[in-house]
Length: 256
Image (tube, rainbow, N blue to C red):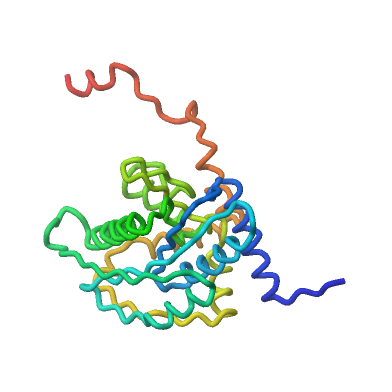
């Protein structure tokens, strides 16, 4: 009987959840050309490995490339050579793209939002330049659930980051192939692979509520070890008949 080490089990668990997410949400089709958004963190590094291995499987046939976006007005210390060598070791083309944003141009939006928006804009630009039809992002299950909690709490909307999002306006599809992978497994993978951590000293990071939501998600799991699966299932199990329903004359009563 084959004896698997803890490292083997972690990698097998990641690959199993990765494959399940790809199939369940129909993330890849024959002929796709996919651009990977490579931040340099553990999640995007893992995504390069997982997608490059998948691309070597005959069907569906697709190709990938990776882009690292440098925001010039944020004090990064990206090890560009490390990222380039890492990506190219999997036979994946590497692109470096530099841009910047001015937080004072729109004080209605948080700097974190503006930075994220400009990064996304850069990804679309590079994808179009290289004839990619999909952009793959390294969000995992924890990211998606934390976004769900943030949107419910701060936006009053039951929404999150879907595994597959068709952007008709830009003729592009966003995919999140690691949507079913737990962050704890990716932390272990980073240790197994010895990922080199990139340095980022973001002056706006303290303004983000994401770290707070990460703590709340952990608290929910302490209350119920299956909490993450309940939250995930709730996104496709919306029982509208048990939710508040406004009547047709509700607006007229409010305006009276």
